[in-house]
Length: 156
Image 1 (cartoon, rainbow, N blue to C red):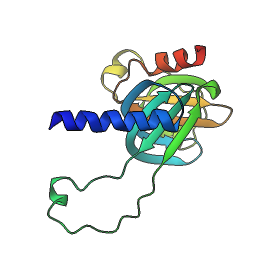
Image 2 (image 1 turned 120 degrees about the vertical axis):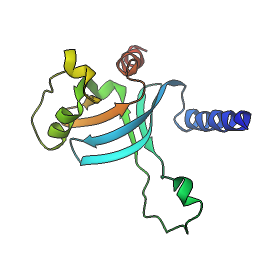
Image 3 (image 1 turned 45 degrees about the vertical axis):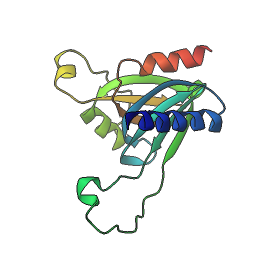
Image 4 (image 1 turned 180 degrees about the vertical axis):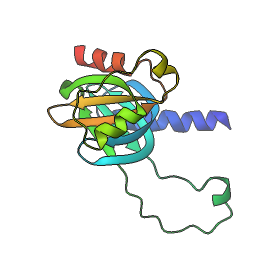
């Protein structure tokens, strides 16, 4: 069974590499909390880098265990895909979820990086700024390497 799941995942990533004409540099599960332009989003999905593009893609939520026994409702879900050229990314800052919420609600930046004890007791969000007025707020599963992956993609 696990072999089948791995081959499905491998096939998915191969399709993404073909679609975006490049190689995967970074991938993680994420929650898009919101953007400066569109406000709060609260979407779960994948965040990945293929060559010189940072890409977020959400997926329709399944019904879970109870969904197997319930009648399926027609979904009004619309796929969200964000493609951000890494060359446009001007900064990535780890901030608290409350700071992210304030920024999404219109508080002017720049955001104060999270540090010290606050880092231990807060949900960490990555603020990704691109261009003059674009900002994206991601809570990522793999927190340690997003900034490095973006920097590496910019160098190549």
